[in-house]
Length: 135
Image (cartoon, rainbow, N blue to C red; front, side, top):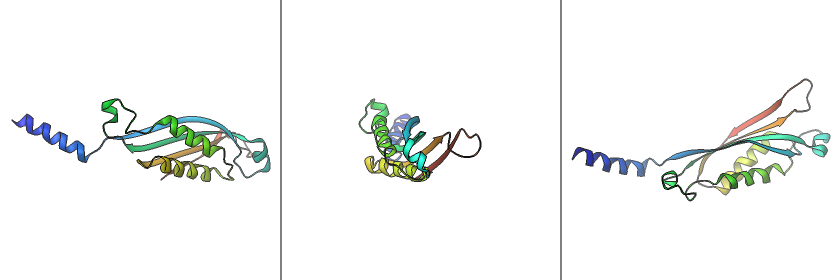
């Protein structure tokens, strides 16, 4: 009898406590034309982007179903589209990526985007500079 009550409580609890997932796309690389200098706008630079999308996925994991979760291939396409629009600063790129993902996937609870410029044109040897935004 006690076990039966616990099972029922567990089922009720799962209704009120939906499963959350972090969908992460890491090390996406693009050649893009972001930057303040004329040369960056003409020649372009290499960029690396990481995105984390927090979403409620319900029973998608238990049912082995893409329905109810966020398709990471579709997230990639959103990021790719935003990387083709030039910006002066990578902060703007990161914000546009976040806003575009939230627009495309309203079920996204929180999105973090990290945009890194590889070998930036600054004095000194720097592997990359990056900005991370969360919204």
